[in-house]
Length: 252
Image: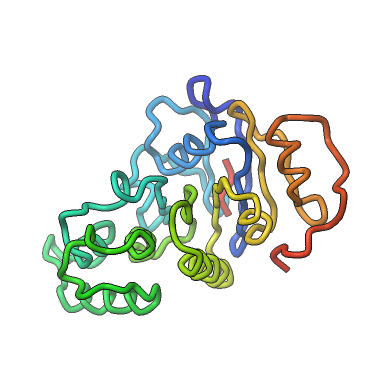
């Protein structure tokens, strides 16, 4: 996958049940890669396969379709992920409204059940789902963003620094959710600026530099020393010691 001068011949593969991390210094193409996989980069070149079948990702609508099943949790929840003046209910159902409609009419009973289930799953704390989402705490707003995309029942989930700026308790809940989704067979691509998060959550980490994947780290090699080295595009270094807090398809 390539785009302008910001993505240079990116090749990656993800398997069902796997959490793959994207590392590197901020601004090395991680955001563009996820946007490209979600069909929002005009003029990108390359091919994407889902379950071995080539697909065209020309728009988010196509990416989130039943045949493909990609969801993107964006970087900025306030400006990209939510409509702050609208209700929790409206935000949760927005991306999945077509799935809950017949002949253009929303099945209100199915919508209500799906929203209630998502609020319970994510433990969203709100005075009521008919209040404005902008009144929620940052952590609960982020849960609504994630819930909105889980309502589409994705097979592939792209997350762009999903725990930035939220409290520790909500971070732990999101980590547990990612593990649960992976156990259910979702393929997850997680970009994070938090090295501990990448080490603790991911099966392997792809480190990007200048629009390219320069190193893949897994097992004992997945530690902070090697993440920093790879982020700076330095020569390979042997890990000083294994990390103790490590976690126990899409191809393009």
